[in-house]
Each structure stands twice: as structure tokens, then as C-alpha cells.
Amino acid sequence: MTDIDRLLADYIAEHRAGGDADPREYLSRASPADRTELAALIDTYLTYVPRLPFDQATFRGSSAERTVDELERAIAGRAGLWPTLLPRLRDRAGLKRGELVDRLAATLGVTGRKDKVAGYYHEMEQGRLPAEGVSDKVLEALGRLVGETGQALREAGRALTPPEQGPATAPSPAFARRAYSEPSVAPGAAAPVPPQAQWDEVDELFCGG
Image 1 (cartoon, rainbow, N blue to C red):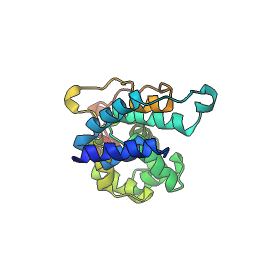
Image 2: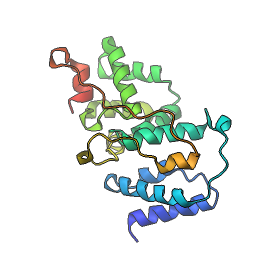
Image 3: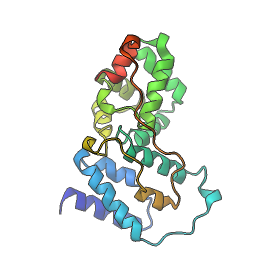
Image 4: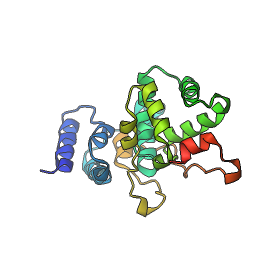
């Protein structure tokens, strides 16, 4: 049995047993090269399982809606699992986004350009900032703030969609069917890179690799 087969079997067993069966957990346990295939297999499985009655009023604003939204951005975005992982690490650390940005800017020594740091961090949580461009310095600093290693953040940021496929358009993912609604926010395009004339230290930290 391959690692993908084992993860899929574990996911199906948990789903059938009535557990949380959160696809994000299983995707995070797969190697970056296997995540797209595992996502497709979970998608196929969820296509054929019986669906629960959908209550729009209950769904809207629920954790299920948040899960669907985050997974949509993760699958169609350019930053792997960051849209699902970073908000949860931030919550676990007890940090609001603004507080995290303040500390991150101070750690990086760019307090005077905090607004630009805030913009880039927002793009990271949205899955629109290509992870390969974010420097190790940023990831190490961010990791210390949220209780994770920079290397783990780097691995989590590997795109789920192979680069050769080009910018991904949003699929109708398994996870939307799991929550019985289409995602409310479509993933955006990659974050724009400033013209060279406007390039500064913050751009180098978040886009220069």
C-alpha cells in the first residue's frame, strides 16, 4: 500500500465513522508531490457518498464555510497550505493579524514599512503570494511568532497545483461538496510584483526568494 493509499484509507475510515475527517489534515501529512493526487482521490470519494441536507443559514458564517473558503484558496492558489495553516497557527498563538504584522515587521527591522508587510502577509494567508519568493528570513521570523519552524512553513507553502499547469482556476473541489455549498470567495491571481523602481527591502524579503 502506497502512502497515498494509506492516507486515503484513513480518511475514508474516519469519514465513515462520523469523525471530523478534515481533508486539510490528510493533505498536510502527504508529501508535496502527492498532495494533488490525494486531493483528487478524496474529491472522487466525496462525489459518491450520500449528501446531508444543506441548510444555507446554518452554513453561512460557520467553521464549515471557513474550511471550504480556505481549501479553495489552497488548491487553486500558489502558496500550498498556507491559507489553511497560517490563520490556525496565528489563532493558536493568540495573535490577531494586526498584532502579528506589528511583531513581524519589528523582527524583520522594517517597522517603518509595516503597511507593506501587512499587505504581503495578507497575500500569504490568501494563497496569492508564491511561496518560493518568500525569503527564509521571513519564514523563520514568522515561525518563531506562531510556534512553527521556518522549514515546516516552507514545505507547507509548496503549491498543490503543479507549476506547469499555469495559474489555476478554481475547481469544484471535494471539500465544497463536503460542506454542501460552493465557496463564497474565488481565489485571486498572484500578488503583483512592484516595478523595479519601487522595489525596496520589504519587496526583497517577500518576493526576492
